[in-house]
Image (tube, rainbow, N blue to C red; front, side, top):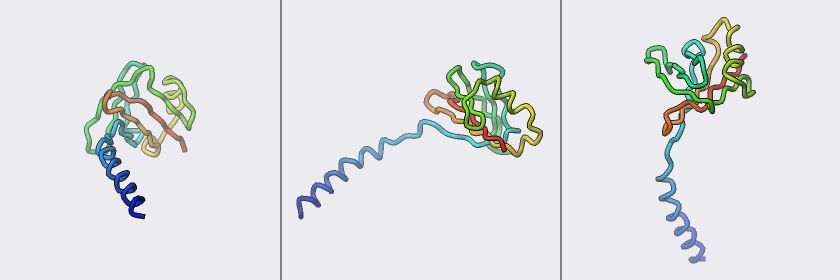
Length: 113
């Protein structure tokens, strides 16, 4: 019985350093569609603000940035087309995933209501 307790204690002690190594590599920002300035091309920048009083953040997008409209990956052009008809841009939420280490946007997604 004491051997099982000792093995469990050793296993727990060995996992403690692993918890200390956890780092955040990406942040997901949920913002109103009205607070997003989309890029014109796949190698441009996207601007967004996370609150009404916040300054706009400008981040790089690349050809590998995923554009997701209603759960379906699409091109930037079709993504922009799908959002063009929305009249109340404050009612739609955009999720922007920012890779911190590379300081670029990896995904932009919208689920239209």
